[in-house]
Amino acid sequence: MRWTDQYRKAVTFSYDDGVLQDRRLVAILNRYRLKATFNVNAGLGRKDGTFTYDRYSVSRFDLAELKPIYPGHEVAMHTFSHPSLTGLSRSEIVSEIERDRTAIEAVFGAVPVGLAYPFGDYDEAVIAVLKELGVAYARTVATDHSFRLPSDLLRFRPTAHHNDPAIFDLIRAFLDEEADEPRILSIWGHSYEFDGDGNWDRFETICRLLADRDDVFAGTNAEVLLDRMPSTTPNRKG
Image (tube, rainbow, N blue to C red; front, side, top):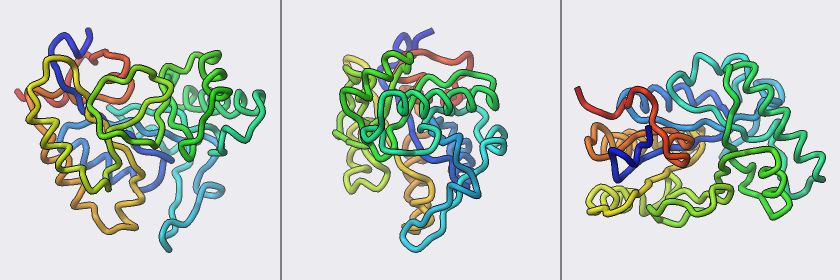
């Protein structure tokens, strides 16, 4: 079934890198019955995937640890080792995507259909490879404050980052709009940013505003962008 058969609005979240803070993020999403897509690098874990954000040390989960973290949410690709794809040859791009996809499928038992571009970097050569490999959608980091359905799923621009100064105005506009055609609110970021910025309360407020809306479908990126609905919808009351 398509979500647009029952709703005119949908909300979805997208978070990158498979980091330890995702555990807290998922707990908040689950509390408010919202859903997200988590984009992971299968080749990076606690040993090789640690980095610094604003003086804070950030660690990734090892791939084998991720399955119990994300039930009810989508796991998508972020490439195997998080390089800028525009600096790679065609064969290297293929390897980064195929190795990530194969490893995710082995752990989660399902083929990931989406991707988030590392660093937001892509060009026509990258997109051509994604088309060849059957990637259904790819999220950029460029935001447009729009609720329109994307016309090009391999250049998908989310509505806003969670730290966008306009995020609460955008949420109010989204909820208040009398929509005659489908509208999407897509929020993205990295869960480690909430530790570094000291603003987990911001995410709580975002989720609280969007929770338990009978007129808004809460889905993963794949469910929302590919216009499909799971057998149960966690945002519906009752």
